Length: 38
Length: 248
Image (cartoon, rainbow over the protein chains, first blue to last red):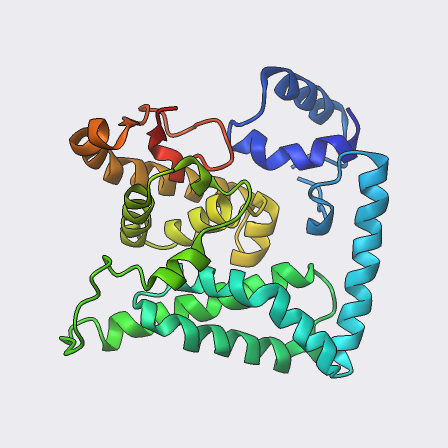
């Protein structure tokens, strides 16, 4: 997952409104991407 | 989270990214026009933002009768403040920040000065939610969370209960679930951290859910509803407002 793909998912992720697959991909992305860290 | 230009919030592909960059350029051009005092640009601004800002203000102020005047004040501040707008945030976020600030001030003023007055005006017969025209205008088109509520009575009840939620939770829920703004945008508009936005959304939704449970229990069968689940975290964009589920 790229930053461009990840960023639109931040708010749905916080709402608990992403699919399991999206959550897994986003979690992996957040683990490695400094630019997307809180 | 990293800073994300709100205008890019929907960008999911390179094509979308290019389009988002195009939109950003377009916004810069419009802002430049606004700064020169272009009447056409102001007409565009009003056409673009008047209705959403009115709906937002309407939901925040204590007395719906104040919504039109407050909205006018918002646009006056936008026009006067345009020379001080330096695109640190998106135009939309900046206008919404002014609107939330103005509506919250109006609401505080109302509670200080008007709350104890008894009105001699006849009570509205629609539960205080305005005329049909207003209500129609308040209904979001497209994928609004309210789409999940097929029954007007239910929608009106949710609006009514939402008005009872205390601040700052109410405004935060309105921005997230009705205006569908991102957590980052809400953090910018309300000038708090992302964590605070998250906490306010969760608490606001839970407060709304609690207020609606009794109503659903009482009227659920008749209205074709089923009770909301206990957990405040729900799937779907309109989590809080969809504290009631319409049985399909």
